[in-house]
Every structure is written in structure tokens, then in C-alpha cells.
Length: 291
Image 1 (cartoon, helix red, strand yellow):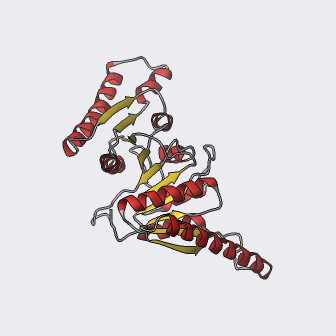
Image 2: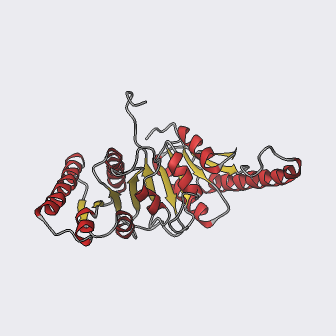
Image 3: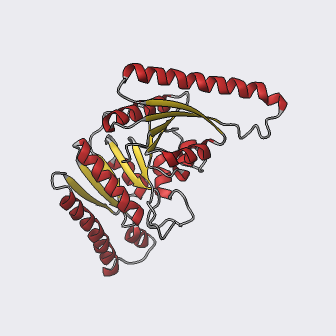
């Protein structure tokens, strides 16, 4: 992680946001990196700043600045070793946080607790557009054990595994590598007979998982790594169940089956609407030829 780039945490007046602030502060302290606390004045519905809206905008701006000052003062008093700055952003929440993430090593947000649905939640919007890893934190998620990572053989999941392994090794936690897919089961449920082809598919996916685990054990000989192949539950459900009570869940922004035009894959989207523990979405690092 680039020690010159701060961990950025989005601040709102909510309990998940407070949990995100505590989590981000603890991470900044552990990694000895700066912490940037930001609040977005969402002015998307005040297009053109109509005269009748100006007083309300001023109230919102003052409220945001006061909230930032209180958070900054509290962190400086409780964590004097953490270098903290505060900043008020304006505009669409998702876009503003996404832009800010370009200069951050990680963007930390509070979860909303929304059920699965359309991509309208602010954390989902930011996770879809951010250029840094995004951590989504809910209240009461601080005391878990173990790191869980979703894998499917895609480039995105390969980088997620690398991130998760480094985190688990640094934290002294056990790592669970979960590969969940339901291909053969769907075919059989649809009325197709069970065949050696279905068994072959499972064997091929087991190889993907085994190779991933073997590589991790070679890179991190002291790290306890468990490989789990799930062929019954949907990937999002399997990840949520496996990470219940975990210290961290890590996912790639898109999986092997996602369309390239989608900024956030369906599995990551579904998990972020009900994160079972602190959940990090990693970003695909492009090569020079791809930029």
C-alpha cells in the first residue's frame, strides 16, 4: 500500500458511518498512513442553485463542516499518532467519492442495510466508480475472525485473492478461499440428465480452486489457507454465509461472468447490499497496454 496516499472515509450522520470511521481510523493507525475524513454535500437535486434553495444549501454546508470538525477533533484527541484531515465535497455522492478515491489508498464507507435491489445505494455507487479498493462497514462488525475471499478464476478475483492473502498474513488470520458456482446443478434441475460432462465441469473448477490455494501456500508458507468449493448455493449467498462472523470479506469488482461494461458485478452488488462483515471490493489494476 502506498503510504503517501491516505485512507479516505465517507462521513454521514448514521451508525454505519460511525462504524466505518472507527474501522478506517484503526486501519490508518495500524498501517501508519494518513486518514482523510470526507463528507459530500449532495446538491444533485439543487441543479443551478435556485435562489430559494440557497439558504438550505448553506445550512447543509454548515452542518457538514461541523460534523467533519467534530470527527477530526475526536480522532486527534483519541488517536494522536494518526494524521487526519477533513474535507467537504460537493456534488453527486457516488461520483464525488469515486473521484476522490483516485488519490486514496482505500475508500471506506458505512453500509446502508438496504435489501437487494437496484443500484441506488450510495455505497454501491461509490464502489462501482472508485479507483481504489472500497471497504463497506456495518455497525457491530468489529470482532470477527478469519478472512474470506471469493474466487472464480477471473483476473479480478485473482487480484482479490492477492489482497486477501496479504491482509490475512498481516493480521495473523486464517484465510478461506471460496469458489461458488451452480452450473451443473442448474442444468440438472432444468431436467437435463446428470452426466460425465457435469462431473467434468466440477472437476475443472476444482482445479481452479486447488491451483489458487497451492499458489497461496507457496507465497505465504505460514498462512493457514482453506479452499472451499460450493456447488449448491448462489455465489452471493455462499459468500455471505461463509463470511458471517469473519474479520474481513474480499471480492473482486467483477467476476468471470460479468459483462465488461458493468462497473460492479452482480455478486459484488448482491453482497454489498447485505455485507456480513467488513467487506472490501478490490479494483482491477490495468496494464500500460490497457490504459
